[in-house]
Length: 515
Length: 102
Image (cartoon, rainbow over all chains, first blue to last red; front, side, top):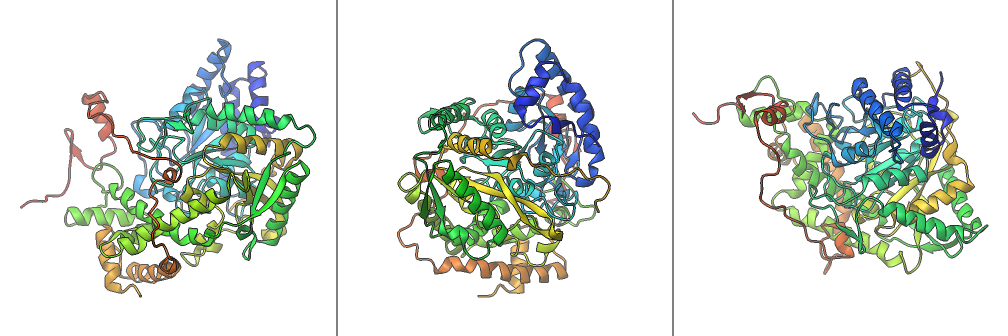
């Protein structure tokens, strides 16, 4: 089977081909829709609307013909099913929203449409973004393009699988506890979660509002920069959207300008581009529980940073361990509140038989929500209930401050960025973590603290380690920066990708052999 | 402190979930496992530490905005129909629910 996007390693190369009329957006869209159908076994897409995709492609071709093409005009993308979209159904991977048609587009969807991208559809994810293997989806699991029997990660699993399989150039994701970074890591692509509040949450179905943040997933740091720059910006429709980032307006162009400045600064150092850069390596990120193969690949990437001129500094983030219990109090608490809106009255699944209003709501919710969602609603309801609020919820929020302070104690004074693993292992076989409710949660150890602190972080491919079936599977390197330092992180990741080729590795397309 | 079956039943009621007897038993077991994990929080000394609700308040003052109390969306029968198209039960712009008053 042909893979049209294989000929284009990044958005810039596809941009050139589109501008030179070597390919049209309509041809590209046609071909990709066929490839999506051929790779149906990945279960990456959960809703398609070919007519609408082709309409967007036609508009893009006209824009190009008129000489008004922007960076992303005609670039094929797709949206995680957490973002509401006009024209494609929006379900958050849940039966409770089966067939839901949004009357409006999410802010992120609007921004990317305005920039000229062509959306190919909606991508599979864990129900309401709760999960880390894309196994909690009402549509069934998405598969990892590197091996059909391992998970793509989650919750943005369909996004990661679609990008890794070359079905889109980039995709949107959301990251509440690692849901952009972890699947990016497990599928061998790049993904970034920016500082909390820099991308509007308007139209992003809420899971845990003080942690939720959108982020792009793509094949390179430079492509992420182009996507993130377009997705970012102040929006009055999100009460926690921020207006200024350390004095600079939160608007399109901020990330790009920061990136360019950092890239120029890096370029001045010639063969040692990272001269003067202090990379903090937290001892807590390399303890027991980290797979040897993953540790090796991550350490090799750190050595590569040193070879490029960076100086390694040992640091400590002493409260890392507590991020798991703190997160699993705060996130379920916010989820139980956010998901109270699914009442079977205004929208969503309604049960067939009921005795009264309360019974109707309760039966509908238990039929519509999956097991993990109900579990987290129960936990959240408990920790917010009378007599436990202080002991659990407020205590978790106090520990959240300690975790955020850990980062502020080192970022700036001891190091400029932090490097470490994203996930303790490579992608695991499907079904492995379904035995106990907390087994999968423990693997979130390296990603949760960032959401609790609201800091930006990203994952880029840094090698492979042996996994299921003896196959080598991708490993991600996590880069963590201080608030609003997305531009710096992306510039450093871009430089790393100029010196390495991990991000260019692609899985062999598989057809018809998936379960 | 273990979570009892009656605790679980009370939480399910508060959460508007209707669990079967089996599901309730399972939820009870799971909640106990989860609270074993969460219990670790209790041992941490947080005297004098303020809860952190908004992450950016660690570096700057955060005040949440209120929008103007004004009509912002156009309102008409077409808009109403679009907004109500997802309702499981509706009649002439009204959401239908089971009878709540006798």
